[in-house]
Image (cartoon, rainbow, N blue to C red):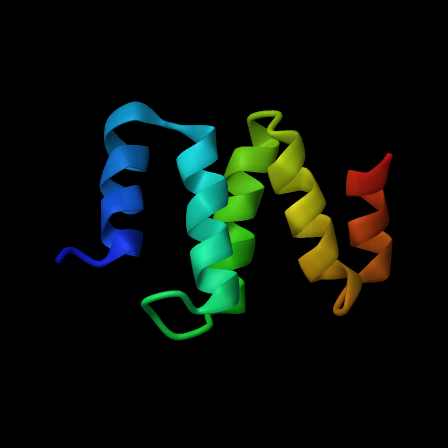
Length: 77
């Protein structure tokens, strides 16, 4: 069975899917099938947020809230 995060990475590269970017962020944030990697989660949430994905903006803001509240606030506006 392929690791889910590898499947999402391939889909992002092929299609540029923002939902795949957000899902990959969720995988890294939760450590599903891989170790928890918050910086990777932020990277993929940011990629999707920059393309206008509201779920990714919310997820990114939630992650940033604990480390950089001012930056997190920008995503709640």
